[in-house]
Figure 1 (tube, rainbow, N blue to C red):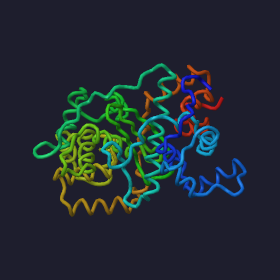
Figure 2: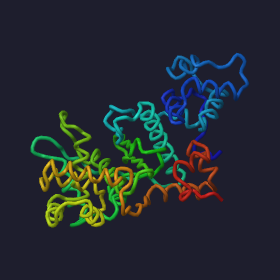
Figure 3: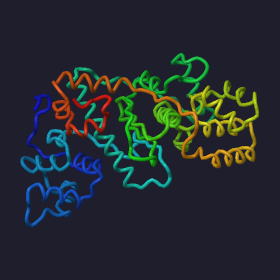
Figure 4: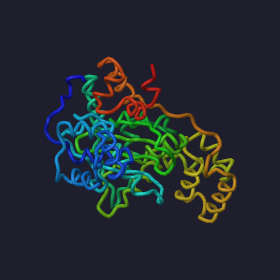
Length: 364
């Protein structure tokens, strides 16, 4: 393996052991079974053993470290990294999901984005390309200052001018964020994000969602890093307000909403103009007091009857991330191939392709 990351004989980082297991969606019992199968253990390795390892009561090094790495589909040197695994509640991990989403699904996503962060850091070293600096200073939200004020400030400072944003992904990358479009295996979760102090924020956006929702979702995630909420602020509602104003400024959108009576057909016309969903435009219409709550409910019922909840007409073309694909491709070239790049990243070739897609890492 490339000498960039030498395997150390000290014990594995127990946080990374847990993250690697949860990223694969394995229980402790399932990991114990994998370990037992790999070594042909008799008696079999128990769930209790895995539990003690993950609690730090037992250390993992040497041959046992290599065994865990194989079972967890990563490299031994990744598991011994001295790094923190960030979790929900620490102010830097967020997700946009359905209320019915299982806690196990969220744990898996949080584990995956923590490992993705490590993979990108390691690939950046291999490519000789530093990750971007995120120098955006978040603005306070609370009292007289709302998330919509912050969104207007962002548009002004970036010189976005009037009208719809052509690519929200390009705006996020201009601000210094890392955007990774990825299938999350369904529509339970639209996105998850990680923004450790002093680092560029990392946004994983679910490609299983239509483009209009992905654009709004990315705007939502930007709200978390552009706004600094007061303690009593609802951070998710704050992010929603930020995204709505960033993508469709009220001063401009209100005139469009008032020009012609709001109907499903009119919402589709405005969708083509503002590049957000008809459902989001309808919500904006009532939030901006263009229509009444009763009218909102009536049109909402029409939209549901038309089947737009599962898929709206007039889908928008997908946006393309540039920064991360360029970095990954540079790393592949620098180390001499996909297999070597996967090893440097600390994962398997199949996992590397799953993370970044065949468009970024084609089969050769």
